Image 1 (tube, rainbow, N blue to C red):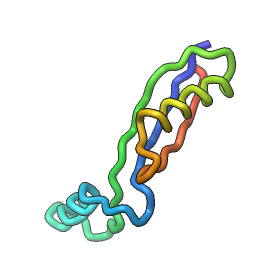
Image 2: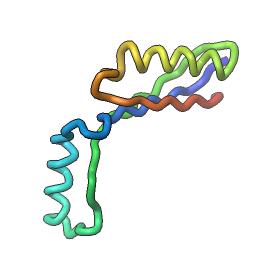
Image 3: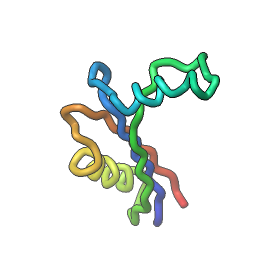
Image 4: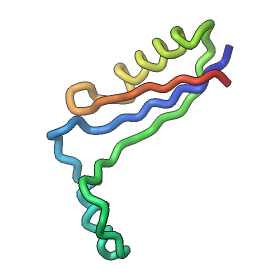
Length: 83
């Protein structure tokens, strides 16, 4: 079966986020004053061939922890759905 995996990677709480801070500083120039605490991150989407959703989740989680995220400063979340 083919599954679609989405891995979201974000900086852990307490880690400086210069990209999020830059976005937040730009918001008033766009007339947006109600948004605060902006945090930036990355999202990766890919297909996984696996026998079950559990197997696909294990593959995506392994990929996230070994390649896509730096576990020292980043957290990752994995979502898997059948195609």
